[in-house]
Amino acid sequence: MIDRCEKIINGTAFTICVLLFGGVVLFSTLFSADYVPDDSPAFSGFSYDRIFYLILAAAILGLSLLTGKLCKWNIKVCFILYGMVSLVYIIAVPLEAFSDMKIVFDIAVNGFSDPEGYLSNYPNNIPLTIYTWVLTSLFGKSIVVLKLFNILFDVVVLCFLYRLSLISEDKKMVWMAGPFIPVIIYQNHIYNDVLFTALTVVLLYAVLRKKQTAWSLVAAIILSVLQFAFRSTGIIYIIAIAMYMILYERKIRKCVIYLAVTAVLIVMLNTVNTRMIKPDPTLKFPVWSWVQMGINEEEFGFQDGTHSTEWTMEDVINKYEELGPYRVLKVMAKKTIWMWSEGTYQAERYGFGVGDAKYAVEEDNALIRSLRDVENSPVRRSLENLMKAQYYVYMVLALIGLIGIRKGPEDNRRKYAMLMYLIVGFFCFYLIWEIKSRYIYCLYPVVMLYASYGLNMLYSLKKKRR
Image (cartoon, rainbow, N blue to C red; front, side, top):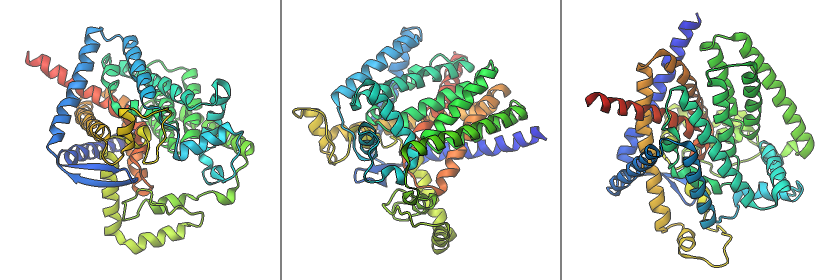
């Protein structure tokens, strides 16, 4: 029975992933999904300069792999180089906090003073505020502290990607993932994205490592609770892990223990958080506020400023009925294509700032002056095009890897099955929820794992031809 369920579920998940990855590659070959600086999504046609950026992206990847080979795939060298580049970046672009990250930072450093009721509107950010308060209390009330921890968490991601890649005996992983520019630019973003991504990668390792012990289960439970605390979409990881335990490990009792203890700890942690901060529940935005934004036609599911505490399930149903099946499906198609094809995770916004961005410099240099000119900055445009080209290269490799795993050894198929569950989970969730390409930033390690497998397949083909 379980064997049959596994085949049906994995077959369905594989089909969805192939269509999604293939659709992204095909669309990105002909068009471009763009993030407009005024905080809105858009599409544009093919531009011949993309060929140059694709060549440049492939060259950067090739240079990184060549460096890794010359260093005998020494991960310590990679970590040192990555840390140096990251430090140079946060020094060269000393972006001040803005938008939500500034609000959270200010609340944390001011002893949880929240006169505007932000945490009542967004109680999901209470753990992030506590985390920010702890770090700034211990190491100083400066956003530089949080940026340095972002660098540390990125190194953690690389380290555990390496450990995950060893499951399939791949030592090239960190040298392949290291030069991905959006990740470096995100180090200026002192929000929950980098931390959440680090927690989820360590969680994946705890679940997928070859030697499973009782401590592996304890680690999986603790990490599941923590990652869910920082992002509600962490529930997708919890569901994927439960499916993996049942369909691959065939340990139903272990799965029940995992789910039960995780649920209890999540409730306990949420209770502690709300008692500590004491948000006003009447100011909380209901889930229906995000769902109704998820089908706005003007910006196809992107945040449109219609957040309200008044939205109800009935309002959302009425909105769906008003649009009708065709228009709803059209919105879902456009939002899916844009979200998964944008390719930069909106790194330009969160790493360089918006129109009124502030930088911790006494006098603007050429780089800062260019970044301030949001609409016409050659630095912004060049890096945006390069990031898109990098994403395209990695997605092509990931598609090859996805198909190759399906045709490879059964053990590999099952190990990578949980990654498919994650992709399908996020895909389904954001069909109805409000979107930003930033929301799938946490999946870039999954893309890297598939891309690494695809790259190894190309290496193997090259060796066979010789």
